[in-house]
Image (cartoon, rainbow, N blue to C red):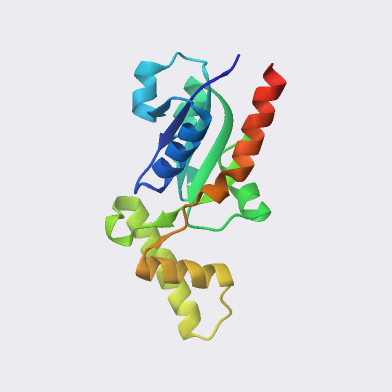
Length: 174
């Protein structure tokens, strides 16, 4: 088999931009999760890009159920680290596929529903730590600043790992 498409779900556009960049460079067709239901067959091999909310990669479960996900890329505000990838990997039961995390961004004014509530809670927690003089991690400070001012960390360079994996996967498939 071969990878048929890039499929994604995006909330504020950061995930969409990564999926578009990846599809453009690889020549793979690009579909939203909804579009994929009409364009792809059950069991087709895909690469999935999804945004993170409460440790869950949005849309991953239906993508994983309907398609053969060969690689998944989570997109979120938090910087990439092995510890973070392990946490997200466990929360989403990512097994037998490659996993990448890409730093996206935040458009504070566009947050809605649960995402807006969760970010407000996270920011209040950080602010209380700061007020009490408690230790705050550099990541927490950076997230606090990004939330206050909006932030965009999307870059082609962050896709280097998934590009390398894809090239290797295609070479192995031949």
